[in-house]
Length: 119
Image 1 (cartoon, rainbow, N blue to C red):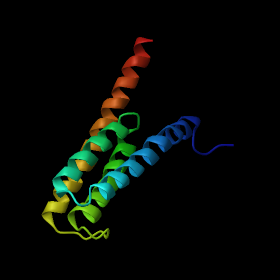
Image 2: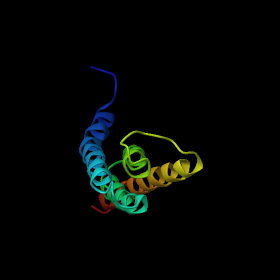
Image 3: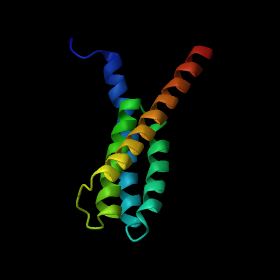
């Protein structure tokens, strides 16, 4: 069978658990910290995004950051659980969380490649 290559399938499979865990963790943190200041939830979710993105690819890290932004915006900024956009502040939070996820994914990927070359 030809189509997507074996390496592509391995990349997809390796992204499943970090992506699922990162999204679930961001959801739980945002929901639990709903009554705290949004900055507290944002910080907790940002740390979670970075941690879950490390074993993932930069693309999966960016996806985790996007989900984290949606949960922080809905639960902690809007306080209603609905995704309500508020302009430039939302764009800043989105950019920060997506960048954190992508950067952590890049750092993890670089570290894994470096370790593979040494081995």
